[in-house]
Image (cartoon, rainbow, N blue to C red; front, side):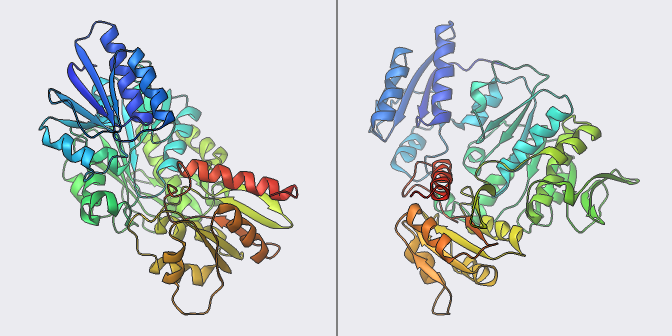
Length: 461
């Protein structure tokens, strides 16, 4: 662990930005030669409260501006700031190093990192890896996009504690030295094109999770995914041990399914873990997620006994195919974290034997909804669209006959979906879009859905 000194500018005062600013302010108060400034282009009561708290700690905070101090030595950027935004362009023009929060935390940490990335499944796998380590008696913390920013914990934990970190493409884009001992790449499908500019840039930013790995490290890569698969050979050429995940292929040192059993290949024999029927998380995609998590946890120090026990006891994470109620034989599932079409594809595989009414809508992130419309026609009884992208999604279905109901908000959408569903069906909130048209984040959207379902079950809403 080494202190960061000089004049540090924090861009954005979300969770990660606040964690960085607070840590640097604490360092300054302890006598470390660091000066802290923070800028957020937005304004509002919540930001004003954060600014006031930071001012009290000696941080120079500016809100509602893209003007930056010109004498900074280092910039730490929040993941929500797009590269082509005026604030970011001004920051780049300063010509000083720019780091993400996870890179900042890594430079301060003495703990080993396990880093999980991918378009979909990151939170489930991060939570599951942490669960498997805990079941094995290995101290760990789940950090990053899930739970607390890593920066808030690195000063509190030592080298025996594993930091299981969910890392987004936004965070990885501004990493330089970040070196996880175990990395996981689950999948790469079109998402956040509006932020990265192209699928190629998005993919290369994801792959930065491997950039500093070397002999003695492990990379877990799902080769069933065509976006992730090409990196297996490339990373192996770095001298990194690669665990290839495939539900159908048995490969040396791979993770696979044989006769309904999750298995790891140790080079000489298959090591059986648990049956797919033992998993409490639904869907074929979660079989892949379980394999990846098991391989990563074992590489990070988990025991076989702990992995087997943890795979049997791990329950769905909130907002990821989370069951939230049953009304008149219609079961409701909250999959608010499904913010892109590929996540919806995966969710639909969980209900192949049941009728589904799916709720789609929110803010588009640059995705084409036509492939999603084809899949929904095949698998669903009806679709209800809502929010900012409702018209775009509805138009993707074209003129073919299919039940599509347009609504304004999530309340109307949930009511309409229940009216369309039959007993035994599923109403699935799996929006394929970001939440920022009507909600602060996908969690607030999922919480609202849960509240609506609970109220409808009691005769309200």
